[in-house]
Structure formats: structure tokens, C-alpha cells
Amino acid sequence: MPNRTQQRPTTPDTTPEPTAPPRFVLWREVLIAYAAPAVMASAGGFATGQSELRIAALTTIAGTSALVATLVGLRHRRRSADSWAARGPVPLLALAFGLGCAALALAVGLAAAELLPRIPALADSPWPGRLRIDLPLSAAIAATMTTWRWRASLPRRRRAH
Image 1 (cartoon, rainbow, N blue to C red):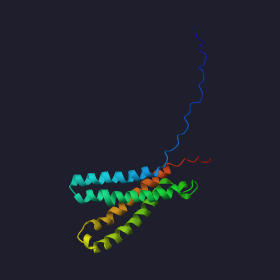
Image 2 (image 1 turned 120 degrees about the vertical axis):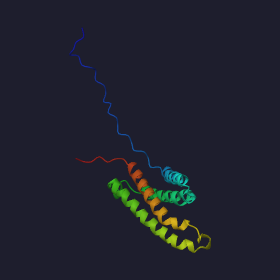
Image 3 (image 1 turned 90 degrees about the vertical axis):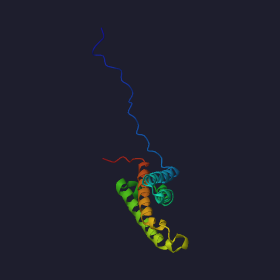
Image 4 (image 1 turned 180 degrees about the vertical axis):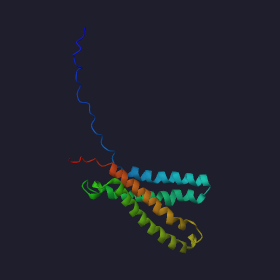
């Protein structure tokens, strides 16, 4: 008859170690920043029958997203782990970068929408008028997502109690 007071053998501590966050790989971020808006805006263009949107999806919308993701990603990669951006709250940081890039892109879009129609080949084109919306919206989304993903790639700091 087995002894009921007998305890089960103890096993070594199997507490899983925290996994490292995924690495921030710039080319992958840029590829996603181009492909995601290109697919989504193209789908919208096909669904609504807007050929202008389908063309903009692959040029001004996705191109702006890729450019902004590249510039923001390069800037973040150069930051030290002790910088203010690596320590601040993620939503606030992403919002700040998103709004900052949107403001810069809006200025570029407004200037381009004013100057490009002066070129005779673009005088009747609706394309320069789209820049006021395409550039800031694409820049805001790309900067926000790139910043958020960069911060998610940093190791979490343990807080002192």
C-alpha cells in the first residue's frame, strides 16, 4: 500500500525566461510601410472604380509612407537606449512623431499643390491637388507605426520598487 504522505518529486524551476522583443529591421519596416497602404488604397480604388486612387496608391500614398518610415527608422536606430525617446511613454512618443511628420508633410504637400500646377505638363492634372491629403496622412501613419514598432523592439526595463 503506497504511503499517502509521500510527496511528488520536485522538478527544477521551469519558469520561462522572458523572450527578447523582435529586432527592429529597417528594410522590413520600409517594405511594410510601402506594401500595406499600397494594397489598401489600391483595393479602395478598385472597389470604387477610381483609377486616380489606384495610381496614387502606388505613388504618393505608398511612396510617402516608405520614405517617412525610412527617415524615421534611421533616426530611431541612431538613438541610444538611454535617450528620452527610449524612456518616454510609447503612445505619447508615437503621437508626437506622427503629428510632427504629418505637419512637415502637410507643408510639403501644400507647397507642391501650389507649385506643381505651374508646370505646363501638370496644369490640368488632378494629381498635385491630392498631395494635400496623401502626404500628411501617409506620413502620420508611417511615422506612428514605425515609432511604435521601434519602441516595441527595445528591451523592457525593470522598474525599481
